[in-house]
View 1 (tube, helix red, strand yellow):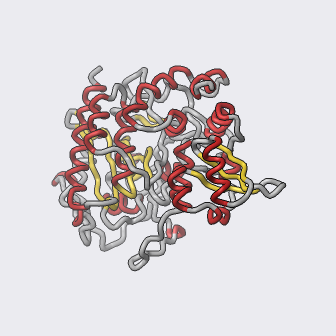
View 2: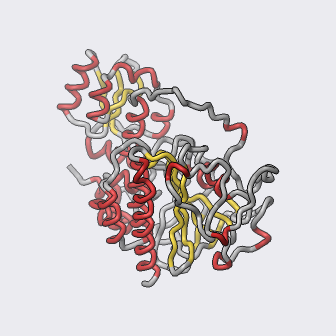
View 3: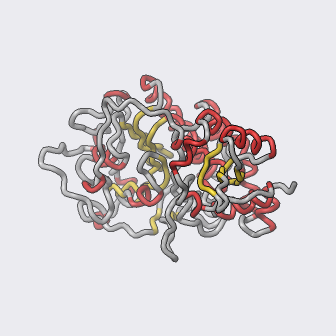
Length: 410
């Protein structure tokens, strides 16, 4: 059996340099190679599926198959088996056979699934991280709805760069020079005193014409500590961990240009919530060993996906915080990269909270390098142990600051 990397390179579906970098980072991140390359925007999910199909000699499940799967078929496979074996029924053949998409195809699994559904099945394969997310969603245990809240996206809760509503009269003006953010109702009460600091300081080099109520930042922005995305070429806009609608021809993700040439940073993307991420010690160790900003950011976001229900990584450009990557129930790649929050606008905390979909316990972590804020991570709703969330987040921030300082000094 050929190795998956050999197939990807032979078919010219992935750049050999990108593959080598992913293989070097893989042990620390704990992701399969196709999933890591997809997550970084360096491999099209359909190409990954075709490579896996060639490797395992089974049908490959493409994005259109996942997007148009029949959710009702999930009931034919026992939830315990689906979650353990990472398997999801997606359709039927013309002959009535149940098509089951799996992560690890093989004769033993084929027999196990056929016995469980008491019928004929066709085993197909898809990239692991996408399938894990779909299985988690399809077979998730129902959560108590005692305090559930309906979310109406038609109210436009996301602050978008070209359409930011004026602040309501009762909002509190923000004096960032105090290093505190006054917030009505104190939504940070559950996470202690973690606040944004000095995001409108002159060191951010804000341009007054590109901040405030009617800001108009260009799609290409310049940040202080983000390397250019040139080492691996253009990234596809569908660099997500789950099936996404196809974007129009010619569309591209927002590009960030920085002063450290020769490195690449993956585009904004979503990460699936619900899987067991690395421990905080493992994540900070991976960040401390990271040889590039890309590897450090991957390790941080991988840990955040298992620790918080919502998280967005913001870069700073001329007085605005721009969404780059993250995860959350409604935070798709398009939504994340549409978020742009002018730092001079009233109630920065409220706008960050809105960008996460109004989580019950939001917090924001600025990461500083040489006394400058290099990026901001906004999070909401710890998965467990809220009492230690602030401490954990601050520890992650210190590790990121060390890594960015070390990488920037090269």
